Length: 378
Image 1 (tube, rainbow, N blue to C red):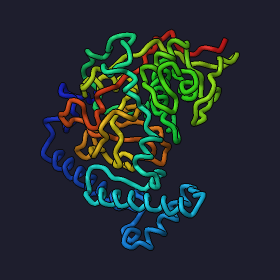
Image 2 (image 1 turned 120 degrees about the vertical axis):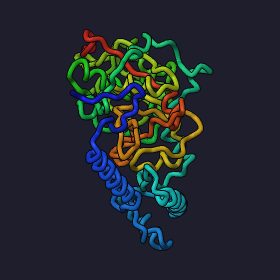
Image 3 (image 1 turned 90 degrees about the vertical axis):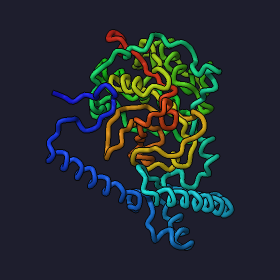
Image 4 (image 1 turned 30 degrees about the vertical axis):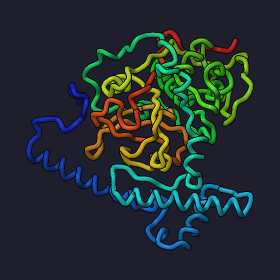
């Protein structure tokens, strides 16, 4: 019999364990915790050694090797000097954060020479302001269908169930809303049809322009509504990503499209509701990601500094518990070099209605009837 989450929906050790089992469990947790602490200072993980940050000359050498690794090319010496200074300041923040040995760690990734304000302007694109003061763009097509769900699984990972495509990269474009939407649609389509197909973010960028704004930001609910009204979305192979807005292309003869029936919103500020939905399918989620900790997140269960507003969209693809930390795991769209091979674990069970980084404020998912599967361009 599989384990399920108790009524309070927080997976701690089940009761009635023997003393020996409890001792082994505690020992294992301590060992794992000690092991995870080494990640904060492992050069293979965080991208630097303690020797690298001891002297200015070593930091300059580190910058040079990092630039080669990430294929950075600076047009002028002045630009290179400026980027080095940004790199040095970002490295200082990463080192200071990792020395705290918290539940998560930061690392030198592709954004290490990007100033924080520049990062927020170029890579965050959730535009909740489009929804108006109410925070929602329009009434969902149907009500929250998972309200009565009970006996949720102890943990869920839709990656292991074959419902998640490989991590993608939005590049320097505020198109996270499109990637979040597409990942959730890819998931529900696989669950209904048995086929996992990579779908087109670019189609949403080019064609869903009435309410969403391409690289300028958008909302997942608007994107779901577009897919419903358009009677489907093309595959990524037929409509590939360009990292910029283009002209909307009409449906091509014999091109495959994936359809959905509608979409539903998860009740706001409710961890329980998000877990109920996530136990049944991947879910689009908005978070406040405008912090340097999020920019350089490398691993662990995040409970650090967040931004001040909802500004980034990801896709929740599971939940679980590790080393005493309950978490939700989310797929990001910044490539496999960011975070845990492109994924992000965020702490849950904090008691705050909105959750860490406001994760419970705006979440939604597509719906798909068994009769709505593949279609073909007219």
